[in-house]
Length: 94
Image (cartoon, rainbow, N blue to C red; front, side, top):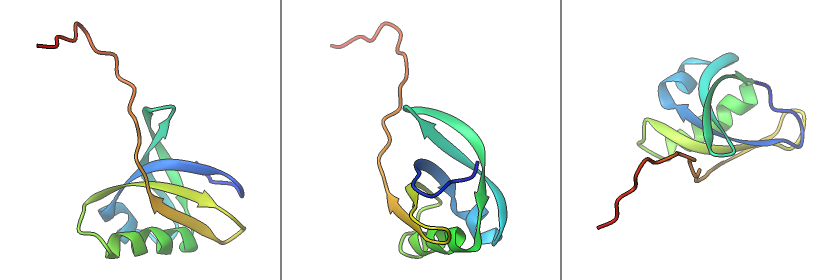
């Protein structure tokens, strides 16, 4: 999956994947309308640097990130919250 200029997507990214790759795809979880979908996220050098900068400030192994591409080489990466749609059977409230 490639992010075009003007697009914004929410991904769950693993620290190990980002630290090991400068360019090329990584496996990430894309949240579309609250549903998780595994995709190959195309990484550029500038995107990898932005995501690594987020991980340098945290100790977590995974992160939910909102990634927006604002120009040909510039990305904005920020933490996000994703609501997951799940069907529940017989939800019992006591």
